[in-house]
Length: 210
Image (cartoon, rainbow, N blue to C red; front, side, top):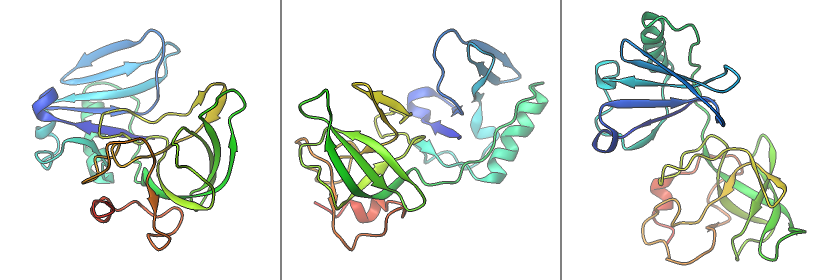
């Protein structure tokens, strides 16, 4: 997994990369403009790159999550090595916002408003706990997979909701900042012909859903 984010107006010329969700005490070391973050067990959590626009020349228009190409990751790894760190980054080109098909749904045993869904993502079926009042089975939805960064900056990690495992998020139009999305709870139910389970969600096409 490789999550990358760049927002020059908000954070300056810093590229943030995350490879693992860290809890507990962290160790932070900066050398030659590269900051390494390690978790409480010594595992790599990510790197921050100062003066990132000097490493990658096409960052200016980015605001938020970036899908780094393999050549871009190679340039970052060169900077990591020059700084004296030994752990490299690995490119992750898999889409994080996809079309999902809700094949099963059941009530959460410990909640009066949550539901446990099984969602077909094409190459896998995942369990997602969802609180949308309009969720039902046999519909297509927009899924933020584990490793997605929402427009708010929230990162989707594996977790539990009221004790039940959940791997991903079924999204509303508001959460994705889609044009004219209603200001009310409820996930986006996609038209049957929008795409197949596992297809990358097309945000330009999605902006015309409302």
